[in-house]
Image (cartoon, rainbow, N blue to C red; front, side, top):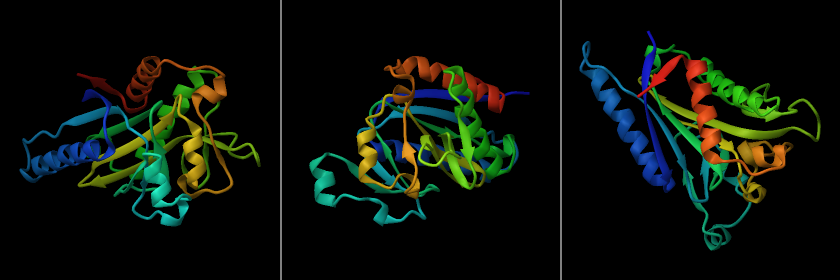
Length: 228
């Protein structure tokens, strides 16, 4: 029996607002679990774009932010130290950020497998555009040419948090993203690899709605769920 996932497109929202919303959905599901049998948790899939912001994972290194707080504020870039996994990354216009709030007990209680599933969503999407997305050993996310020195470039960052098997945070896919913002950080804490976007790889600007629909198809394919 397929799981049903509630789809929400939030438009462009500040990072802190959406973080709080994710937390509220997670805590609502945790409360339902505490009620015991008969209390049905709910799955959510949030699509959003954020104004420019750097986010640092719970075990990330603040030294991977390469500009001063003053310069960052002058450029209107926010900063948050978050409770997700992973290191430093950038969110901004032209990027789809997708937050699945899922009860993984209804899928499979395996965080590693869940992360590989998120990667597979992006790998499938890239294939639709004729691009070969790949994993890089020991590094969460999706890359192009990860094994080629000097050519490896990341197109999608992934970082999650899980409480009582309820997931939050998720993935950030560079569609038409201004990649210049990544020059002021060490993306994902990996100094020797580049960052790219669908726009850069394909040589054209893409319609965000088109990419969203392809992402929805790939999520349903990988995780075998339906939307409502």
